[in-house]
Length: 395
Ligand SMILES: Cc1cc2nc3c(=O)[nH]c(=O)nc-3n(C[C@H](O)[C@H](O)[C@H](O)COP(=O)(O)OP(=O)(O)OC[C@H]3O[C@@H](n4cnc5c(N)ncnc54)[C@H](O)[C@@H]3O)c2cc1C
Ligand code: SF4
Ligand code: SF4
Image (cartoon, helix red, strand yellow):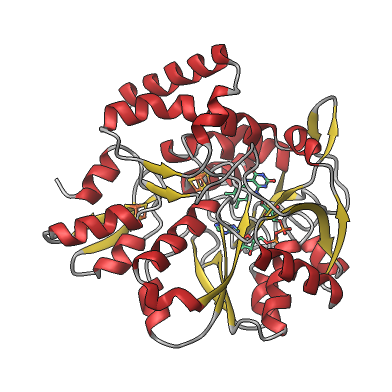
């Protein structure tokens, strides 16, 4: 069995496409499965050398945190921030910080383009990596797409076809994949000038998107679909060719459907908080009785500034009028991001059965996972360990 088949068999694949890009389409290509997730198909024999490369590159099994610490990972500062442009603040997923930092990097000529996920041209559903070269491109890719995306299946071609410098925006596992790629092939090292991560609780399948718009009672496909944004948090919103539409609140769409259809690898994710990025951005929810409050309001992000490069970008973006910044008390994050907080504390417990059954296939290093597990409630830890074991046995 090839390394890729082993990764798939254990449900560690997140469908990023990096293996297909590095091996080439004669050896491996990406397909969309009936379960609504992308996966690689091996086309011909993979050499031992290639297997070793894949085991270092694949973000499903290899994440190197490079000495993280604390519940929220290493950081230089934590801030509350939003776009200084009210139209972007309104349109974006949270407060438009990701879009505004991308625009600052592009318009200050720090980079030639922004690599980011957006919806595929001509599709309402399918997502891919986009190369945003203009303000319009960047703004059109704002908002969250709670679905898979082919992020890396063409990355080698993209990097080989020019000398352009990029900012890279992605989920924490996308950042891990890009970092693995740069480490494996140092010739690309100076091509990515900034890593911007979104917080990520999990990637629902495309089937979950379809189930969500089908709550409208219709079975014919819409022409456009957004998951949130145009307000904070904004609604899941589908529009059909005849102009009719369907709305579902963020709480109902994510909480009742999308969030229940994420893959196994997301459930054992070692980093949903962008520990490897320069900055990691999430929803700075107001909290009520210890939980996030999703009442519509003006968008606000929190930003975990993790590197001096991140610090520099934030400062310059503020100085040049792209973002507004305020200080934020780190103790507020646990209430805003209860899921992320619990996942971080319990990850070590979840990994025990996974590692034992897979023969220690996962190389999650420098992420402070087991230290966090020791500070968790042990009863909850054991429950999580047993729950994960059950899931593995069932799959
Ligand atoms: C799958 C998923 C899970 C999320 N989980 C959390 C969470 O646990 N906690 C939380 O606070 N927020 C979560 N978010 C929301 C996300 O953190 C917000 O986008 C973030 O707060 C940035 O807000 P913004 O207004 O600055 O982003 P915007 O300015 O709107 O920019 C959003 C950026 O995200 C990129 N993007 C959108 N969808 C994807 C995707 N599927 N893959 C890769 N990149 C994508 C876009 O290209 C764009 O650059 C999630 C988003 C997604 C897509
Ligand atoms: S590199 Fe990406 S697509 Fe390939 S096996 Fe790993 S997670 Fe799956
Ligand atoms: S939860 Fe983790 S593995 Fe899943 S999409 Fe988010 S960052 Fe990637």
